[in-house]
Length: 358
Image 1 (cartoon, one colour):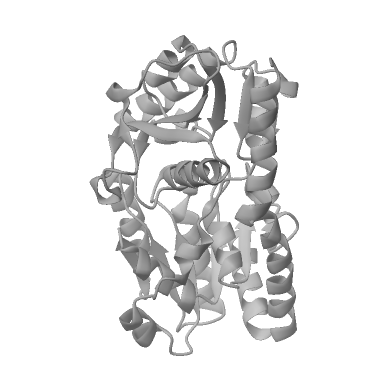
Image 2 (cartoon, rainbow, N blue to C red):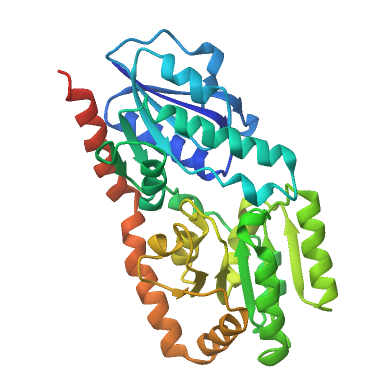
């Protein structure tokens, strides 16, 4: 009996990829024969990380396939044809309407992804969603609620012990207020509202503040619009870093005084957990899975009010007791995402799937 994982793309540093690799390690530690098969494999991961999906062996009814579902691909249909028991690991698909005005390819991919999710609703008896928000999404698309279990995404916290980029820390850790956001520059994350909040904060509270928008910009038109908006507001001290190395991301967390998230669609939102780990006070807009991931920690904005958000940044910067209160709450919430906690729950579930027909 084998437990096989399949996914469209295994990428270095990607949340889905890290989750997949962590599950592989978990399965091996528990004595299971396991392997990862992917359509695309990041060469930086090495040949041992995964095999091409074309090399997938013949499977039988005793085998388990964990399929990571997050995008539009023919694999969404092919996995249903396998003889093995299927467990769908659902990471979420961004609604295509966010991309309609920016990138036809991304729009079509998201639409195809949702079509694949709906197709598997009648095929997948077992589902592991990374959030209750995702679970509710699946129920609305025809999945049986009782067949869906929620296990947060596995995050490799040990990797965060990597030495950060000292040059960034030396240059930017100078007492000025550093507001940080990490994540891809894509329309659902609404980075224009980060810029607007920063404008108010800089104008009314702290003219020396800086904003770091850390992440790759895969949609050129959206990237251009964000930069034009910053220029229109005559904003200085705003840094679009583009894609950066992992140790540089760690440096931006190290210098952050506030982590600000105004995204409107997240299936989980790993950067929120990363900000917890680095003891950064979080301000986030309540949307999709954001409030669930925060779990009562941080500051959750019920409305998209950029001026109010700017005022909250100022209050946290001036009130040390409030800052520590937020950090303490985030540290408490962080315990839910410790790998040993999630792995124990997930392993029990996988074993129950294996044993159900025995």
